[in-house]
Amino acid sequence: MGLLVDGKWVDKWYDTESSGGKFERQASKFRHQISTQADASFKPESGRYHLYVSLACPWAHRALIFRKLKGLEAHIDVSVVAPDMLENGWEFSDFPDATGDKLYNFDFMHQLYTKAQSDITTRVTIPVLWDKHTESIVNNESAEIIRIFNSQFDSLTNNQLDYYPQKLRSEIDEINEKVYHNINNGVYKAGFATNQMAYEDAVIPLFETLDWIDARLSKQRYLVGAQITEADWRLFTSLIRFDPVYVGHFKCNIRRIADYPNISGYLRELYQHPGVAETVNFVHIKRHYYFSHTMYNPTQVIPAGPVMDLQEPHNRDLLEYEV
Ligand SMILES: N[C@@H](CCC(=O)N[C@@H](CS)C(=O)NCC(=O)O)C(=O)O
Image 1 (spheres, rainbow, N blue to C red):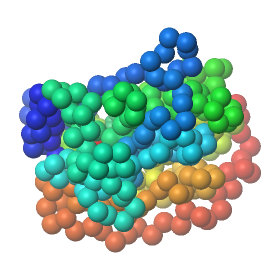
Image 2: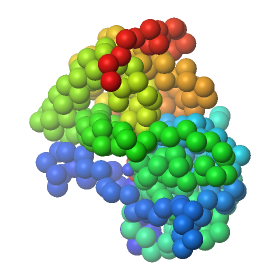
Image 3: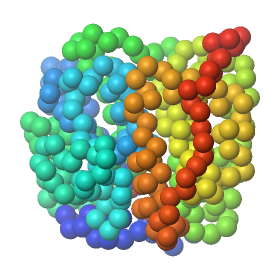
């Protein structure tokens, strides 16, 4: 684990000393858009873009799900890193279901970042949406990559499914904000905290938000009502990792997802949504966290459980929802 400083790889864990034991996530660097507009530098073109992901990472998982839901597999190919993120950061070593770097055959993800900009200073995160024409990074912020996938390739795919519809945008944004701070990033803030207070500052709002969501899902099928939206997929990638990893490894153990009746059914419904189960890889997920974070799990032993039957009926369609 480390970062690039002026284009050089430096092996260094997150600095929590300067922030009172708190983990603070750095903003993503590359924020270009893909657009059909005449003057756009990045236009939607089949085969032009390449997606770099880890199957372990909840942020990359969002992008993989949207690629699937929006029928982009034939247009945007994927390279999958190995689950271990150790002294060289993300790497393309051999591991079942990892693909290697299909474009450059690099050994490490940081080589892709320095190919984009040779003197860059940044953390080397995943997902990355790469442009083969300019040989650079279009965008490395998952929240933006999924919006690009949601709408900008529709003319190529003829897939008009819209997970961020105009009329629901303000409600989706409001829920995303709460879910991002308290859950998506909340589990990391709890897990990476280096003192008791920083941990409690994260773990309490995390479970308050899960309690709130469970109550909400007792009345409506999805986070924003009767229609599945981006907000649901953004929550899904954290929920699916919760019982296998966050409960134990990140000390998010006030309750398990299995203890929440409505969230459990909702999680099963999203998992059973066509195409989604294929994007979930529990071997990569468990291996990444338990093997890479050696300061929390120095033995690198990976727990065997939990048993989860995500194919059980979810019965969410029986719900009388209020919108
Ligand atoms: N804001 C980014 C965050 C991505 C992110 O932090 N990914 C993690 C993997 S789960 C990573 O690559 N971490 C490496 C690092 O922080 O150095 C996004 O949502 O795309």
